[in-house]
Length: 316
Image (cartoon, rainbow, N blue to C red; front, side):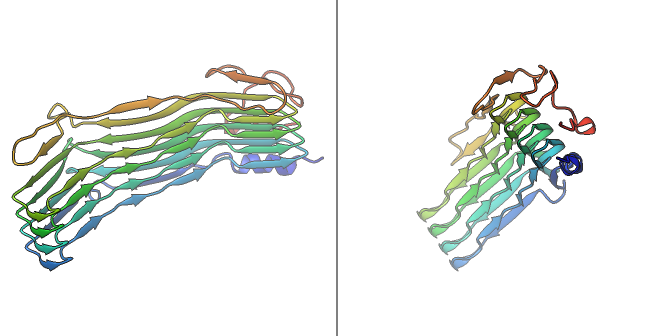
């Protein structure tokens, strides 16, 4: 069977650069002011910068031949604010559902990397990259939410919910009747640099002056990813998933919730997770630590590791 098609598929898709989306320094700052609104449903504001880079990288498929895929890149979203994050002010609103504000930056990089599938042959995949989402403020200026002097029902409420959802499934080699070799360097990372300065006071009525600050990070990394039927599945991974909330440096990491000047709290969180795995169906399994050799299966030629895109294995 001629394998030229499989080779071309692997080479053509090997150097996919990835998806990159950056909100520039000037445009990322949110300055929203709502005040002196009288009536019902007036002066409500929603700021929602949405970034959703999706990168499916490598992409080689072969039948009765070899599928070789390599990728350098990933999915990345960065929201840089030169002068700070959100600056929301809502005050002196009278009536029903007035002066409510929502600041909702959403980032959702998804990277499914490597991607080689073969039936009756070998599947080799290699990836360097991952998915990352960063929200940061230069100068470590915190978000500022102020609501006061609102009269009525459900007025002057504020919500700031930065959402980051990097998902990285790394390596990705599947073979039926042959060997599946996968190697990956990367992971899923979400970083939020900032904190909130919330002020709510002198609100009169039902459901007024409520504030919500909820940074959400959901990094998911499924690493290694080699599946073989009647062959060997070999997977190697270096990376993991991490979610980090860094407070501003200038004030020692203070996040202020000030309601009538009575409460000052310090809070931040940092967490990380690393997963390395390979899934055989029938055959041998070698799950290796980063840098270890990958061993070919039934159709292999000996010990080797899936190579970088410039030197992809051409199969049998």
